[in-house]
Image (cartoon, rainbow, N blue to C red; front, side):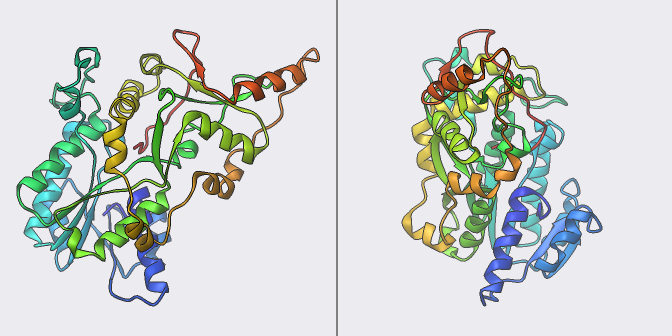
Length: 361
């Protein structure tokens, strides 16, 4: 399912590549709410069939899954920012694969942050995020906690599931406007993240597709957890990579999580807690997404961040700062120095960042 989205679409491309290589083991059924949409028609040449179904309707999903050996499941909290709705959808999917007697489920899940924060010494400093429509009242990161909560139900009910843990998408730098920006034409570019000097696991969307494809080729992974990341980088290393490829200085603004939460765009508090979760529990979070050499080989390798930036350089057109009163050279010199180390912000002086409502892992 989700064949026209980021994860599902990447899986479609990976299975198509497998077939193009001469492996005809799998027939691919793409499930979408609107088979006539432009996105659905774009993937039509890569799949064997496209069927219409809606995760709000258990019966339609069960019919869509019927006859399938495997099913990839994914949900999108960012569609309406309603975790109660997402939990309902995930439970509908759980019921649908049971009715259809699917033999191998790959479920895109996440950790439930509540399981970690409950045992943290600073748990009282964590902000609970309000949820609409009667949703749980104790969630710190609803868009991952709902997935984590229902993901455990799949396992507890003994379903033939591989729990698939993803990472922060490289594509967020494009799709969510999180790439290098500047506040004026005379300022240097910067990326702004509340991750201090932590190294954050990230993943190329295409690597998720290759991982999903590899999981379905290995029945021994049923009942197991599989994580995916393409590379781990610090904020400073991300900025350095953008600077190297794009040809302009790029600073790293390391804002505190509570400052990030004050930026005012939809979901900023949610995202601030998400980044804090990835930093505070970084060791466990990263270990869950470690990729073995064997699995990496099954995937056909992973995409380095630098290679991804090179391939998508057209999305990051960075222009030289414009001269104002002959200070441009000084600005560039200072920016180059600052790009070598993160800039720490403690208060309202932190620059703002914009995000749209879309998938963010």
